[in-house]
View 1 (cartoon, rainbow, N blue to C red):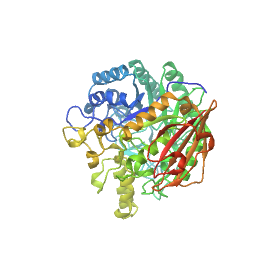
View 2: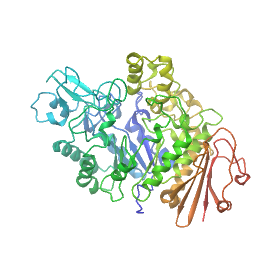
View 3: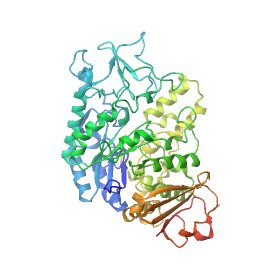
View 4: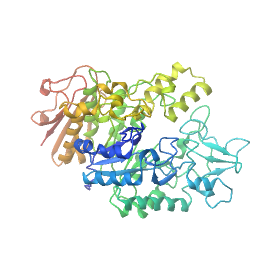
Length: 554
């Protein structure tokens, strides 16, 4: 297996709006990020993945881009970006940009031209279609609820938007669109960035003819039909030839609806497309029967089965990205651990142990290293997230659900859970801002904050430091082959790793009670690399609630 820096890295995702505010306007910014680089250097991470900082009207918090080569006013200036990039590089930290090129903002100059007339040279940069029987051109629903089509009076036609109506989809079948995107990417690479995380990149190749899709609910067809289209690999290979292969980059694709076989193409070891992809099967396991809005806990046996499928399936032929959290996912302690005061930190460490000892590149989402938890939402008025708000009103007003039936599930799974401001200390607004924060700070910041955890040896933060240091020390953690044990146990997640005669045993008790487990004899004289509890002897064979440990044997 070929060794590379991006396989051996640990990546930290920053959601700039919620990370650190330097000027008191309540919105995180680039100078705020620069001010916290020493905190990240101390944590030990290698790479920052920066959620979008480009010019945007902020209909979808920066994922609706009006200018790919300018900085959002609230975040600062290009000079601020250059300073942050320089300061990060000075600390040995790389910067990966979020590449959002499935769609633009409806305020982007390309779209303004495209919608101006039917014969504009940029008309074919987007998908324009006439209505069908006085309605939308097809039955596709948007990922953000409602139809995926928006009527535009200027030319009496509809345009396609798989997300918000303010996010019209680019037509990648047009070579001029691809050239615009590749040229823009090249200019960012020349500036010195270190890679791209590619937003919904699996959706860029739409089905030929844009046919109706199977229904995803009683209202709309499933827009997942646009994933992994006929030309998607062709287009990414072209991107690789013309841009990515010319630089030493980390590239990861957000690939909704990806299968194992498709992932082997996107993240192939020959390097003709991307380094790795995000697959989302595992983070959908606690959804409801009809949609993701549910209060269910993540079931362990299906989780083990799914993660094992990806560990085994990509071993030697492609590369895994390892994550539970990002800006679109609620906090993992609520989903897989225990957010109570008694078990929150222990369970956060257990979850981290389980994930970071697998083969692949781990991603840490801001606040995950503190064991941050979901926000206590009480009303739909507490939400800022477009997806959550739209889903609430569509389900209650159009589909007849009672608010009391649907609100708990939306509150549990809302993307806003990940977007509440970073909890830096116990001062007002958690030290995030001196102004009014754009989104409410979780009231538990007084007891969950970075300042307290950095100096406390047994904190979640310092546990993450140890996990990251171990990955930098032991090749087996990065490259070792994975084998699951106790596949049907509903509470224990146990697996081994093996590389060149070395072995690891990873043991995690995902329950709130004691369990019996005795390591096999080959591990009983091994070295304990890390454990989240020290109040018993591993060879007593008793696991405490949410206890986790890792043993190394040669």
